[in-house]
Length: 373
Ligand SMILES: Nc1ncnc2c1ncn2[C@@H]1O[C@H](COP(=O)(O)OP(=O)(O)OP(=O)(O)O)[C@@H](O)[C@H]1O
Ligand SMILES: [Mg+2]
Image (cartoon, rainbow, N blue to C red; front, side, top):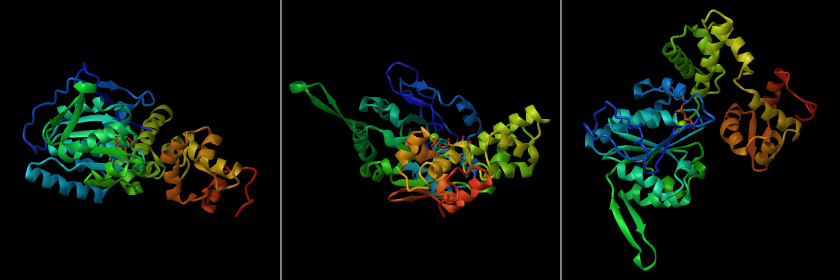
């Protein structure tokens, strides 16, 4: 799963990048100077810069999610009119649907600075302190994977989110004292693929909450067409549509598939993405007509062949596939559930006749095929 660069405070390094947008909501705010920040690339993500290249910078470039955009526009307008910070915002939804994109677009729209960090990078309250003290009035602190914040950090930011103050304990024993530090009002944007894992007190401190849902084929076609233009690649409208169909409702998948198809077109054809080239490229990548990839079909085949169609627990399926159950729950199941290929029952996951039909169509059913339903 793609993750944002993590900037974690450690005391000596350069400041994290600050994005100062052109929206002008607060006029010219001074640049951030946190005096810390260490950038870790995600080793699983060598193509990180490629993702940035295609990421929309302004709300007007964001495709789909109309209702979310309308609501965000309202809180943006109100905050700009009152010259106040945005209310804290929690974005949740499956990977690749635009949580980071929205979190990056909002500071640009407000014309404020932003800092980026991530739940796993904040192991102790001291790690987040530098971001809090460097937050300028109205600026945005984006905390990715906020469900992975340790409990101590979570409790530390409760008073921050409510009253913009931190209580810092200094010294030990009889010399111990607490410093009460006042912070400048700012906005926390949290992103999570697992809003259910957030504690209720943390969730409730976000005054705004938006859930991002899968995109329809027309929206993804629009994203593919726009991004092909950005990549200076010629693509036939039917080919853009075909890529969209096979993108599992997810813009990140569209972008990846577009890049792969472009490589395929350059290597195996004359560089132009026609419908035929797009279909051949998807076949080569083992992405079927519904957008299911090797991992999705393996999940369905395991459920069918090993567990006789279920019900089977997520842990058991994960162990059989040798894939972490979290990965299955975050990246594989949401789309299969949406297709109606899997049901989540209290006793475990079960496969549906529609999934079997699809597997049969793909020549993928195993020895138990036909025993159920
Ligand atoms: N609404 C959108 N319009 C256009 N492009 C989009 C949109 N949403 C996402 N994208 C594209 O998809 C890519 C991935 O989106 P993003 O990184 O925002 O997903 P995410 O929800 O943060 O995923 P994760 O949970 O894995 O961090 C972006 O770089 C961007 O190019
Ligand atoms: Mg993200």
